[in-house]
Length: 338
Image (cartoon, rainbow, N blue to C red; front, top):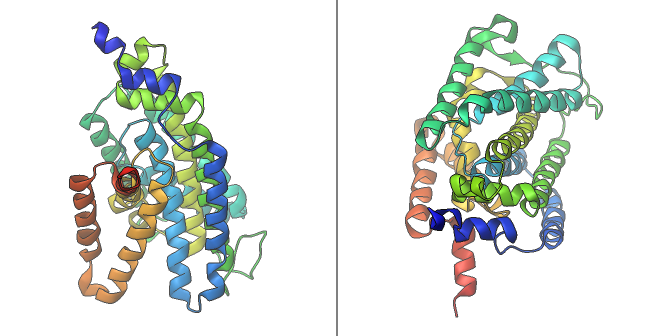
């Protein structure tokens, strides 16, 4: 028992944290990368490529949000579509029913999703391992079924967001996707910075300790339950903001498009491929998976439905077998090699 209570990985996480670049250096590098990505539209001439860039940045932000709960805290969720859909429906309903501009709708959706995460965390965080994973799937699927039969929210028909003249205030742009591109870039950068700040904070050390060994962590003074709840709230907030942005970007949502199980997978897989519990993993994973998904769909057309899932599922399997800590771990290993 004594050996368990003094678990070296847990103690190291609490005292020093894992070897990682200083917070401000990581943010500085991210700022340079964001500036380079922000210059890409100057070389983009078609709508498809710009749309692809928007989706890639959006999923980079979503994967980073998921990474906070599942990568750092170790609470694997396959039901994040619940929070994504919450943000999408909150933004769409407030705009359609009360003419509330999406800026406030996205914020409201984020707060609502964080409250839902706290409410669900109370019973669910008492579950461990695969029981917790199954619970997240069941809850998200239940919410999707409820929306399918909720007439106020459009039921199975979904919601068409009202059209109008281009306006920054109304966050509506029909002639150009550039404003959406820069918003998605900003969201990805903000989630990266928040994760970088949390990684080197007390919460970050607590999360890594909980992920490594919750019993040993608790014996060393970590408030396990409270740290899980905090991770869930932050993760849900940014996921819902991404969902609200998606609703405005596409102009139409229905339960299957924002709360389907595939959405949960697309949120999780970039972080798994890139590297769980790392700053750059979600962005690297999204930069590979999302273009692969969209290009496969466009090349294969309707007859190729599902091929994208097979291809990037195979990629994840290869990474899991060759280097379980993802592409970031593989790159770090190569850098350390003589």
